[in-house]
Image 1 (tube, rainbow, N blue to C red):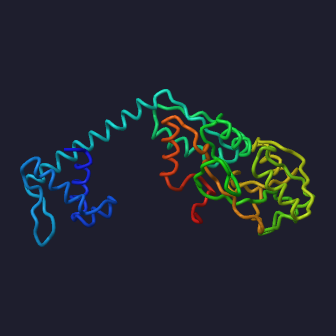
Image 2 (cartoon, helix red, strand yellow):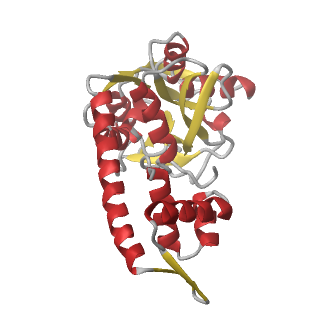
Image 3 (cartoon, one colour):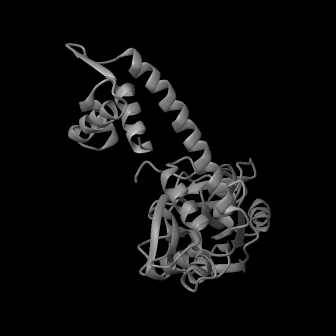
Length: 300
């Protein structure tokens, strides 16, 4: 008797037929039929009676199902406990940009703690471009970054997309606009994120393509400072939607000619990671959406 056989038997009981169980378990009906035959021959009892209604558990089959479920539950608990032993003392080194730290990191950390209570998550905050370099040289196990295209030499998993918005104080002449184009911000004093930021480099490129003047009066990764500068009307800012909380002193304007930026988890292609880091990446890939405010997964 093997755990795999017990899981197949449990699946047949759950779905009530070999064909349905085979679809749900992604195996052939012949494998399931063979499993039942092997178990019945091993214990010398019939586990199912065959009738027009399909497979019906015998008295012995009902007893076997109860014991199998207890064994499988115990096996799952033991497996989880052994993973905790394996992960104890391990640290996942993760890079996150300031904006993505605000938008995604609280939920990411909560999921990490639930999945790996014995491990540690060490966060390096920096621009996406700097964190990409740290992943490439092995300083970081992985990074959550914003980007516009595929990154050669790195594996990636797209978490979703974020819209780029124009943030201005309510007294600004553009504050009443429903939308604007990039060139309409030409010459306006702007507070930009650090020069290692994807968004800053992207906006500099977009202004250059359009032959428009980008008037940067400040480069900083301090989002609180950017918010205060925008609120007071000293400068405007291009930021991801949701990175500053809604407030009456700030207008958030959609930008018509900018596509949404991708948000990805990236790691070094072919690099050997610690077991915990590898499990962390699998956790992110299997977790689905709902990573944070403003992050859309509807287009993925």
